[in-house]
Amino acid sequence: MKAVPMDDDPALILDGVFYRVPALDILKGVYLKVPAGTICGLFGRNGSGKTTLLKVASGQIQPNSGLTIIDGDRFHKQSKKDRFSKIAYLPQESMLPPDVTVKTLLASAGRSESDVSDPVRACTDQQVCNLSGGERRLLGVELVLGLDRDYVLLDEPFTGVEPILIDVIGQHIEQAAARGTGVLLTDHYHQNVIPLAEEAYVLWQKQCYRLDGHAPIQDQLVQMGYLHDDTASRS
Image 1 (cartoon, helix red, strand yellow):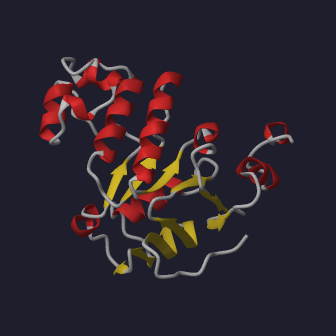
Image 2 (spheres, rainbow, N blue to C red):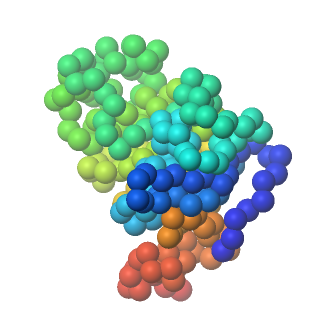
């Protein structure tokens, strides 16, 4: 496994990213590429730096060094405003205001009830604070994908979500990629990411490695010690 050289294809690229806090290196020379129209899975153990990497890409934090390259445009600094025109970011923590109705929230985002899935439409008269955790997460995903950005970063979109809504979220992600959106997706529930991922990277020992596109992702994760042997796919 090795870093992939840059090319001129439309893509979100993180190149040579270093991020450290006092007495601790978190990322050391990370390279990752999300081609337009591709779902890219990002795997790694707790504390490996996945959320940090997404925050660097979205401009939430400034790396010590490294570049974010969006369709050939290079971003040296956080540049939140410029990045927001190209990137939508769903953080781990809920970003939704609790004391408004779903209908009001959709209207403020320029969305109508006809734009959202049946589960969201069914609770438009409820306040966000009264939704289940899964319903809030689904709503957040739909709002972020509805921003129609070129690239979307999804941090733990399946956490706390019941199975039927997991399927709905997965469908939305696949539809976004089919429209040409590049999606960078990470979640502790790897079993929900693996079927969606067309490309995959693993954060391992503070660096990022691209997995071989010709072998099952799950088997490669087992070989790296990220998953146990009994989860490997069997022929």
